[in-house]
Each structure stands twice: as structure tokens, then as C-alpha cells.
Amino acid sequence: MQIFAGVHSGGILAQFLVVAGGGAGGRDEGGAGGAGGVRCTVDATGGGGSLESPLVLAAGVTYTITVGAGGSGVDANSAGNNGNDSSIAGSGITTVTSTGGGGGGGAIGFENGKNGGSGGGGSGTGAAGLTSNGGTGTSSQGFAGGQGDGGSGDRAGGGGGGAGAIGGNAAAGQIGGVGGNGIQTSISGSNVYYGGGGGGNSQGSDTNNNGGLGGGGKGGAAAIARAAVNGSANTGGGGGGATGGTTGLGGSGVVIINAGIAAVSTTGSPSVSGTIYTFTGSGSITY
Image (tube, rainbow, N blue to C red; front, side):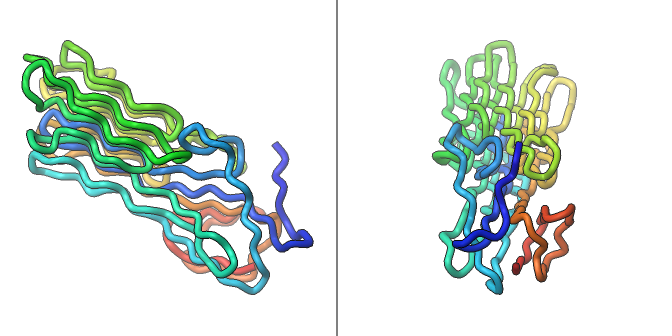
């Protein structure tokens, strides 16, 4: 699609993608981490919302770019940690903030997934026959996590919510929920998915508890000693849930800006392709 950017009478029009860090999976039939929130002006944005409006930037103003880290994994029976926010901020604009993904639910007392950009999945550690709830997503950033299944002998975690879809519920037969898919955008010059939820842990040998498109990590499987998988770096993907060991870490976020003109200066060493600036770490940009 055509990208409308560049110098206009009101200022410099900039398209953007802001992806927060994904949440980590929980431990003890853990739910998966939810994806980091996604806000975007090109093709699609998170949570089924309307496309964001481009930023109107001013020449000579330095804009601060913050790229959120993914949530850290846990090696004790608890809920996973939320991811960290990403943002674009500076004089004359309303700060664009995407919210870190919610951590997955864990041991009894921490069963429910955490709220976030996308919600973490519920764990499978509840009393027999009961379900634990996924966390909620943030409006126009991401979706809710799936339910965990504490049924007798089942005990599987829900999938983390994605930027483009809710996380899957765990199912009878020790089947962990799949991660919700992220959204696809061409703002980088290629069609890429961002913001996939992680897969919930399975107590059995389930091989279908995959993370969602956009960097979601696969859930663990206790019966075959398969470890939970981390969310992919710079996608905001959620980490997979686990029974033992360390849970899947959330994937770090990313910020992409295209104003149709070259920047005067940057910090943080973004990669540059034409007028597209991709920040995989925090920095700044001045036009």
C-alpha cells in the first residue's frame, strides 16, 4: 500500500509501529504470556481497533523512543512477569504508548493470567473441574488470554492473547491453549507479524500448544520434558507456559518510524532502510 508521509503544511507526517514487550509464561501448569500491545498506522493495529493516526512531528525536535523489554521468566511456581511498555514521546505530540503483555497464570493463588497489552493465559492449577481466567487485553492494542483447565488429570494452561486474536482455552486431555495470532503490517517494507501470544503448558505430551503468529513461544509439555519457549525478540511475542524449569520469557518490543524523509540525527543505533527507522532498543530521533 502507499505510505502517506513526509513534509506537509502542518509539519512532518510520520507513520509508526509501537510494540511493547511480551509477557512471560507462568509456572506450574502455567498459562502463557500475552503479547505486548501493538499500535500501528499501516495495514492493521492491535485489538481489532481502527488504524492509528500518523504523528505530526516538528523539525528540530528530538523525540524519545522507548523499546520495552519482555517479561522475565520465573523458576518458582508463580505467575509470569508482565512485559514493559514501548513508546514515542516528545514536545508537541501526545505520547504513543503500547502496554506490556500480561504474564501467564501460575500456582494456586496465582492462577489467573495478568492483564496487559494482551492478557496472559490462565493456569491449570485450580481445583479439579475449575477453570482459571485469562487476563484482559488493552483496548485497540490486544486481546484477552485463554482459560486454563484444572480438571482432574487435565491441568493445562491457557494460551496468551495476541494483538490480533484471543488466546485459546486449554482443553480436556492435557491440551494447552494456543497463543492468539498477532497482526501483520508492511511498515518495515515487508509483511511481518507482530504481537503473537505464547502457548499454554501441557501436563501431558501435547505437541499442538503453539505460540501465535508474531513471535509467540510454544508452551512446555511435562510428560516429554519439553521446555517452554521464549517469545521472539523484537516482536512482542508472549513466552510459553511451563510446569518445571524456567518459563518462556517475553519477546522484546520494537518501534518503527517512517516520515518519508531522512532524519537529521538518531541515537540508539536504529537500523535504516531508506526513510524507515527500526529501533530494537531505546534511543531518539530528530528530523
